[in-house]
Image 1 (cartoon, rainbow, N blue to C red):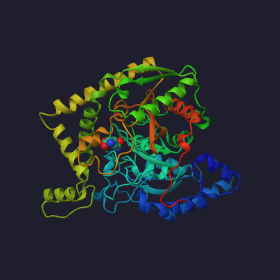
Image 2 (cartoon, rainbow, N blue to C red):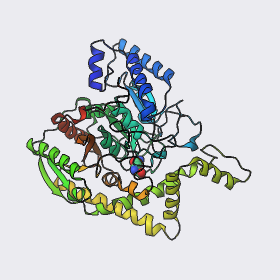
Image 3 (tube, helix red, strand yellow):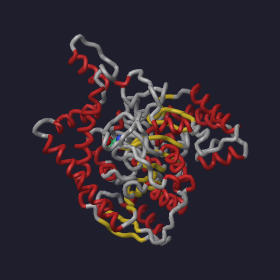
Image 4 (cartoon, helix red, strand yellow):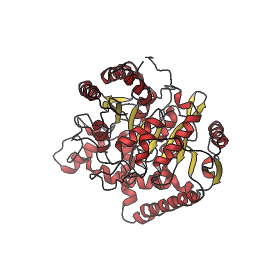
Length: 486
Ligand code: GLN
C-alpha cells in the first residue's frame, strides 16, 4: 500500500520500509491501473521520474531529511516543467514542451520532490467542471457519472484517487477550491503574490495563482513552505509573513476566534444538505470556543458579472499570442490573417473562443468604460466589503459550491450555468485574499467542502485555523473506492 500523505510517508521512510523509487513505482502503477477510467493524467515521463526518485534516495542516504525529499507530485499542465509536455489542455499547443521550470515547480524539485505526471485540465484553465479539456473530461472518483470540478480537474483527482500525495493546480476564480470540494480533498488559494507565477501560462494575470492540493492541511503547509517567497522572475511576488511558522505549524486555538458567516453566501441557492453540513461544521468550531458572527458582503451579487468581465478581457489579451507565429501549432496559409484565423479556429475549443470574443468586445472602443472599467470599480467595492468584514472577525467561513458535484453535460449547454458554479469562489480572487478548501462532510456519498477565507497575507494563520478544524474532524481521511483498487 503506497502512503497517501506526507505524514505516512515519513513513517515509512524513517522505519526504512520504503525508498522514493518504490514509492513512485507504486504511484505509477496506480495511475496505470486507474487512469483509463478517470483520465486525470495527460503525460508521464517514467525515465525522468525514476531518475529524480533515485537522486532523492541518494540524498536521503547521505543523511539529508525533509518533508519534500522523495515526495511524488503531480503538476497541472499549464505549468512549465523542463522537458515535459505542456498542453494547457489545448490542441493549439501541438507538441510543445516545457522550456524551463516554473518557479514553484523548480523549488519543489530543488527540495527533492519527484515529478510524477502532468495533469488534465480545462483548456487554458477556463471552466468549472473539467469537461473543457481538449483531451477528454476527467471523472470524479466518488462517482464516475459526475464531474470532478475544474479547472484543476486532473490535479485534484490525482490526489483524491491517491495517485500522489501532492498536486499543483491553479486558481483564477476557484479552480483548486471548487474541485477540492467536489472530490473531498484540501486545497489552498494563497494570497495573490505568495507563489510566483513565473512559468504559469497566463489566463487572467491579475487573478491567476498557483495552489497546492493535498489530503490534509499538514501537507498543504509543507508544500507552501517549499514554494513560497519572492521571486525575481515575478515582480508581483511577495514574501509570506510568518512563513517561518510553516516548519512547525500548530493548530490555532479556537477559543475566542471570531468566525464571520457572510449572510449572502448562506442565502437561497445553497442546497439544504450543504447548509446542514456547514452548520454542523460551524457548531463543532463553536463548541471549542469559536464565536460565530453574521457579517454582510453586500456586493457579492455582482461577483459573477464582475469576474467574467475582467476574466474574459484579460483572456482575450493573454491568448492573442497563440496565433501560429509566436505560440501555437500553425495551420499554414499563404495569407497571414487567414493563417492566424485557421490556427485559432482549429486549435481552440468553444469556451476559449467564447471568452476571447467576449473579452475583445468588453475592451473595444465605446464598451471599455461601460464594461471593463466599471467591472474594475466593482472589484474595488468587493475588496472593500471584505476589508470591512475583517474589522469585525478574524476569518470567514463559507460554502464552496451551492451543491455537490453535478452530472456530466448538465451545464455545458448553458455557459452561464457553468459560470454560476463559481458563485462562492470568485470574490476571494477578485479581492486577492487567501482561501482554504477543506472537506466538511458528505451528501449522498458525495463530498461537501468548507471554505475559510482570511485577510490578505494571513495564509499561515488561515492554515493554522484549517489545521484546528481538521484535528476535530475526519472527513479528510475518507477515500473513494477506485475503479481498480490497489
Ligand atoms: N471557473 C472559473 C473560470 O472558468 C475559474 C477558473 C480558474 O480558477 N482557473 O474562469
